Image 1 (tube, chains in turn orange, yellow, green, purple):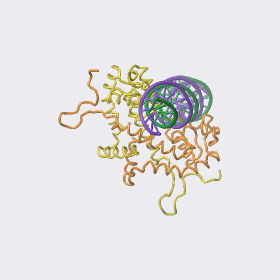
Image 2 (cartoon, protein in one colour; image 1 turned 90 degrees about the vertical axis):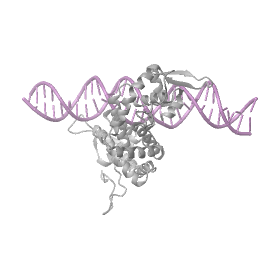
Image 3 (cartoon, chains in turn orange, yellow, purple, red; image 1 turned 90 degrees about the horizontal axis):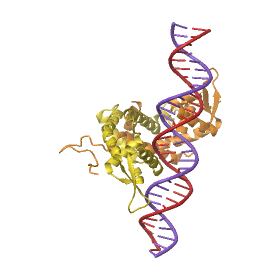
Image 4 (cartoon, protein in one colour; image 1 turned 60 degrees about the vertical axis):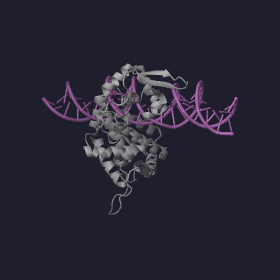
Length: 154
Length: 154
DNA sequence: CCAAATTTGTTTGTATACGAATGATACGCT
DNA sequence: AGCGTATCATTCGTATACAAACAAATTTGG
């Protein structure tokens, strides 16, 4: 109770030293930006979640691949991509086949329904990106995407 | 099978028109940037998850508040903040008390252990932010944080 | 003052995420 | 050939996230 609360001390007449303000930390703002994007996505595309959309879009782009490889392409680990594929499979949006030469692998590809759906949704997805970036000017958008990619790559 | 695969068509001699490249979409890169940050966080702070840290840090900042209000401060909905608080409570890092005048409310505050822990972790958390932003120059960092905040706010 | 609307917290159900462990299979290298 | 290692998929456990439905308590509007 007697302990001083709130931000860490601020230097006598200078700038704040090691004050920790949660709402200024990259991680926190990144999470909020992500939340806003997910909300926009959900409001425009109700048929799929973003991870499900990513998996279908990638399949559309590269054709058939193994489950794990698809996971790598969409940045999901083995356990996560499995759940996503399972749910897409349950809706017959993807087809699973055993791999010919490698009996460990499961080859995933789009079903006709999956292809039709993703083709219909691609234009919507572009609008999701646009709406997400709407608070920025075109110039800012270019800068932002460049820096964000740099950050994501490490 | 006979359907053309891959990216959408590209205009005759010009720039790509409405080609959809998943790896260039804001949402996808945001998610990857977030993944990298979470990984850095986990490697430096093993005692708490980012949401748990956020809740404790905010409690440290603002003192006692109701559960839902804390949720708003750290951008988590009622169901999510409840789970986070439950787990912090199970480890005796926070204390829950009934609110005096409003019998619906639950007042959350730091326990002594919670305060000690968060005070010890705050410097580490600053380093997490630094490491996350390490791929950018100081100038780029300033720009990035400004634009990211703009995006997160909407 | 009282009925309606709102707020607070809880619960349930679904969907990511990821570490860790496991079984089956494939591969590298001697 | 054979053995150790690596890969692929699966499973388990834990922890966010959020929509939706609810009960209890409070606030508001007439």
